[in-house]
Image (cartoon, rainbow, N blue to C red):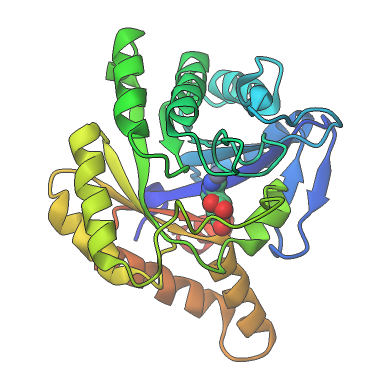
Length: 305
Ligand code: PBG
Ligand code: ZN
């Protein structure tokens, strides 16, 4: 495994000087824009190649039913893209595209009156947000909602805007529902205010559904296929490798997986570093070329030679 395979997730809030530890995500912080460059400088020096940005609007009144603040030019994500492009020209910038951080109800799209997702409105909005991030300078846009047809819609808008050739489209194609996203939702303040995400994320037993979603997203124009969570879904990573033979496969070692490793190490079950390597090497062995990992800063030290 190499430093260049890793993407580090960053939570960026709209409070400029914010630097708050997230209790359920050991060692990880939510940061405001003023804290970003000082935090990243030493990591980039150690070999950090890529980050994935998540916006966290904390200011009162920033959330609404349409997720309007997702692509606010003055919002934390749009500002961070420009800042990071300017300050770290070699850093590869991926941006998570979803509405759940920005909607008042916390769901990953725009809802109908009955509380279910309105596919057309959601896909229109999410593809606009993806294009705004790409225009601001994101190298890669990564839609993590599961609205049907969003990969095609984003790809077509990127082509229309003349930026498809310089924007990678990474699809969270096989995204399973379950209990492993809890710490992330604490970090991003994105828990749904009612119901859950089981109507649009895949059921844990759904291998066939995952394979179909992967094939569908490749057909719609995805450049990278993501599987998430990672260590519980190694078969799906290997399926993605097989189905998308010519595409890179990314795996997201998600917040709950990371927190579990920390909790077990703290309880004396195993050594943290040994397990971090064992699980990440397992994910790579299954067929991932890219791993999104909260362990990235540690790996930069551990992989140094
Ligand atoms: C937003 C999103 C989530 C994650 C990545 N993008 C949360 C969710 O779908 O509920 C989870 C990442 C993690 O747990 O580390 N749609
Ligand atoms: Zn979401």
